[in-house]
Image (tube, rainbow, N blue to C red; front, side, top):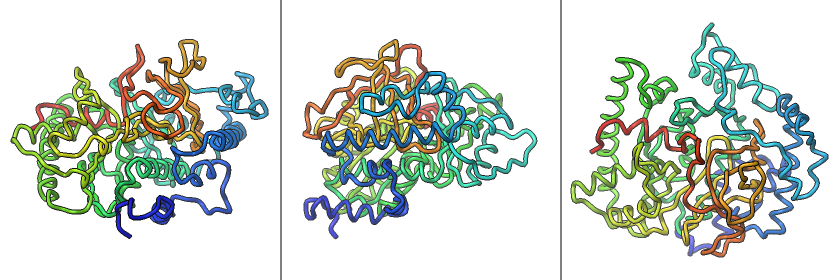
Length: 461
């Protein structure tokens, strides 16, 4: 099969894709309403609205009842709010599902109590967790959970206090499949298996930091993938690099991070030079900070490329280039076109967070963020945490039916505006305004914010 989509039908294209990622899809005979909402639609952003409404309702009813029955702490929270699964009967009732503030996932204790906290957050029966240390570190607790078959990942904000999410294997596969299918739907001009990719992230095979782990599915899709940040980035190392902690050791870590950043930039440039004449697809994905550093260094060296439609860029949020500078996504796309020659329609951004599995990805036509509305309900709330009308600004919240191992019903600290449909392309579902910011009083964060802070010490280039 040729990788160019216009030479095959989209139906054939998606069948080949599903074959490539078949290990992420449960057997059809085991499908729940959640699986029908996630795996059945060929394109998560073109589901007819009436059909999507029924899929979304059935999926969220299933997942809400699952957490109500199998998570003691969330059930008590629901009882305090006087809501039970019997109350969720119509699409309008979905807004009654009790939401958890994203700050809750940062409110953990240390040592063995951290393991208890993670276990209480988990929905269902935990596997046997063996923690051998008397006073374990956060890394050791996360390692013990992951050794037992779970996928505990973390992110962090400027305060250095991490967000931890425990996923079972099925929930993690849901997140990975949803990401790959989202990118496929918005970039189907090329079959990405016939490609070479540079993941501008920590190696997903050996890291639990979500900015890297979320990219693991790409290693199963692209023809060849290189990873920018090799080796393990521990929670302790990340804290030292991001803040003023760690004394002399911390300063050494931050100095080493700056040197590593310069080495990464050099290696990516060498790779781009090697790919200049390649006829298959050249694909960069991950941290906009790292790619911005590459573009700056290329400009300094007076180098440029002309990849055209043989190249593509997918970035993963986090648009603060430095602590005091935010780069608008439109300026970043213009920079990519000027230096790499990749058209703006082939440069798209993904908005998501460690707490959820729903990936909102920009359409190439207008760069609005489309929500996967068959299994994921996006909402915008006012200061009283009540839903606002389309077109009004407020705090982003969501109901994620695909999160089975923890309650994925979350209020975030992000300030967004949602439109009923995209004003540019013909996809029917809801979209977010491309510029997502933090609400007043909320610390900065982003799927790749920790990558920026980890490697932004000192000048790059």
